[in-house]
Amino acid sequence: MSTYPKHRMRRLRNNAAIRKITRETLVTVDDFIYPIFVTYGKDVQDSIEAMPGIFRVSIDNLSKEVRNAYDLGIQAVLLFGIPEAKDSFGSDSYNPNGIIQLAIKEIRNTTPNILIITDVCMCEYTDHGHCGITENGAVNNDKTLEMLSKISISHVEAGSDIVAPSAMMDGQVGAIRSSLDQNGYVDSPIMAYSAKYASGFYGPFREAAMSSPSYGDRQTYQLDKANIREAMEEIRLDVEEGADIIMVKPALSYLDVISAARNRFALPVASYNTSGEYSMIKAAAQNGWIDERRIALEILTSIKRAGADMIITYYAKEAAQWLSKTN
Image (cartoon, rainbow, N blue to C red; front, top):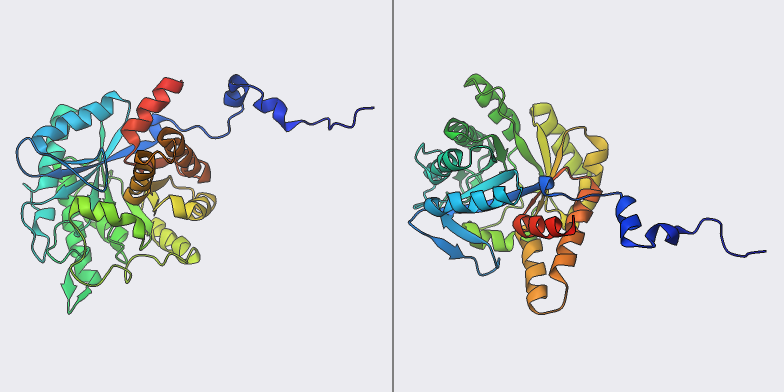
């Protein structure tokens, strides 16, 4: 009589075809949102030292970058702007002829079918690097709401499909929703950075966007890394205020938060595979310590498996090419 079990789990791992047909989580190019940094100038493609393969591009090069992403099957981009000049009010953020507004119009003219998502914050535009209007060394929450609403309206007027407020101000979703509705943009969705943590994984982004705070930090408005119940409350409030998509950022160290959000809320869940996560893989791969393709796809799969419906990732173009070769 055989002593072996009737149920042998290895039967369904026996070859590549059976592993593929029984796979529970499938990552596809449709899941990806590609972040792009846009700057002023002509024929600019500035490399970002901490983010190999990622560049700041001028508007004349932006159309090529977006078209390339779209041709790879990527359906959405997330835009971040680096203005020509900064001031304490972040004026270029809501300027009708500001860097993002011009970038939106360029994409709309050259790749009209791609989804344009725009980051709504002030840190790239203020000379102090904080995400809002400051008074006496602190960010004034309610005055910042007025600015975030102005920025959102200017983005939608320029042609943005989705606005994504990331400042983590209390009431930002409600203020933006109200402004959009009052200005006739009732059908414009909001992707809320609902659970955005005060994280060390943003370091390379701050180099890319030139947005490091000149004093202090962002811990008074971004979430404490130890808290998940607080994150659920932040998300709940955003849902009540009119968010259409909720987001958890960063992704890799907060997979439990993504999972909790997916289990608790019915809205689509986005997650941001941040610059630090990207740069760590790149650095390790350049040193020959890891298989870059294998690790990057494993991490993207873990984010999807945790419950993310969409993934903002700097690996979007590379992953799209890798996935096309395995299908």
